[in-house]
Image (cartoon, rainbow, N blue to C red):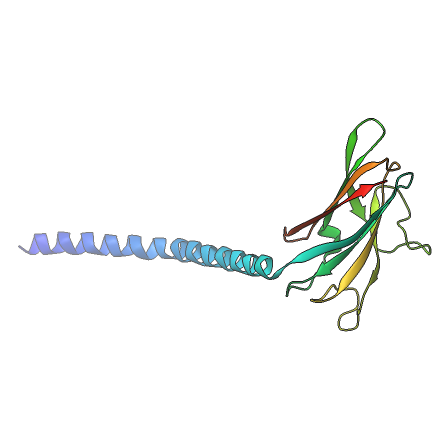
Length: 174
C-alpha cells in the first residue's frame, strides 16, 4: 500500500511539474493573441470611423493634370499621406491607361506636382486645428500630374486611405 501511494504521488508530482514548465509558453501565447486582437480591434475602429468623398474632379483633354477635392466626412484624422494610394484611369489615343501616383510632400509654386506620376496636396481648407492633418469636416485639394496628356473619354480618380477606405469619382473628358 505504501508503494502505491508513493508511485501515485510521483505521478501527480510529474504532472504538476509538466504543467508548471509549460505555463510560461502558454502565458506568452495568450499574451500574443491578446496583443494581436487588440491591434485588430484598433484598426477596425479606425476603418469604421474613416469616410471620405471626392468632389470637383477637373480633367481636360490635352492636359496631363487631374485635380479633385478629398473631403473627410468621417471621424478619423487622416495624416499618413505617404501610405495613400491614388490611381487615375484615363483614355489615351489608343488605349485606356491606369497610373498609380506617388505622393509628393509639397506642390510647386504653381500648385502642381514637380514631376509626372506624382500627386500633391495644394491646400487643406480650414486647416486650423492640426496643420497638415485632414481632420473631420476638412477638405484637401489634390493635384496630380500624369505621364501623358488626357484624350476625350473618361477620367476616373480612386483614392485609398492608409487604412484601406476607398472613394472614387469620374468625369467625362472633352
